[in-house]
Length: 113
Length: 116
Image 1 (cartoon, each protein chain N blue to C red):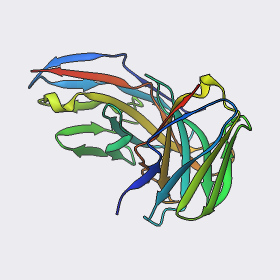
Image 2 (cartoon, each protein chain N blue to C red; image 1 turned 180 degrees about the horizontal axis):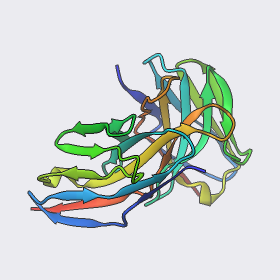
Image 3 (cartoon, chains in turn blue, brown; image 1 turned 90 degrees about the vertical axis):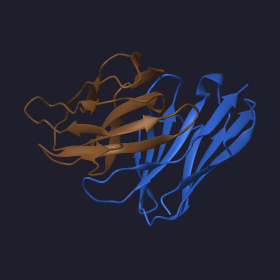
């Protein structure tokens, strides 16, 4: 199984809503990542988890709150988002060793209205 | 800091034409280099990788060689197909700041359009 599964695929939410994005992998990867991708732009790193602990937060606003409940799951909790937060949110995972690639999910297309 | 520079797109080719997408990088350490491909509406898929100087990554007819002396990792394919139409991202994996953790840094992406 070399899949990273993200749900939902599409999400429309209002600026006062609270929602969560979910990501799951069963490859035994101990590093998991959230990236944000705006249209016609490359993915930008948001968060990195290593051994279920947050190791990198790339100055992301607090309205994005990541959570890693176990080694297979990664969540991104969303609250009070702005329309400019509309983007494709990509989850990825990798082994924690040198020279290894990351595996990406299909992404969640988020629209904030 | 680390950075990746890719040629501007879109690149428009006829089927069976030769493809080159240029990629150069700046890194403080010894990065691994990757090409990812993104089809419309989808996530990123690893196309190929190289982990040290002079390594050649290859997959599905695509090739790229890790050139440390020119800090480059250009993507090539001898004969493109319509199904190769996608956005191609060059990326490097290196340590982030002082964390000791690695993550990918991406180039801006190059859109390839192959016409029948």
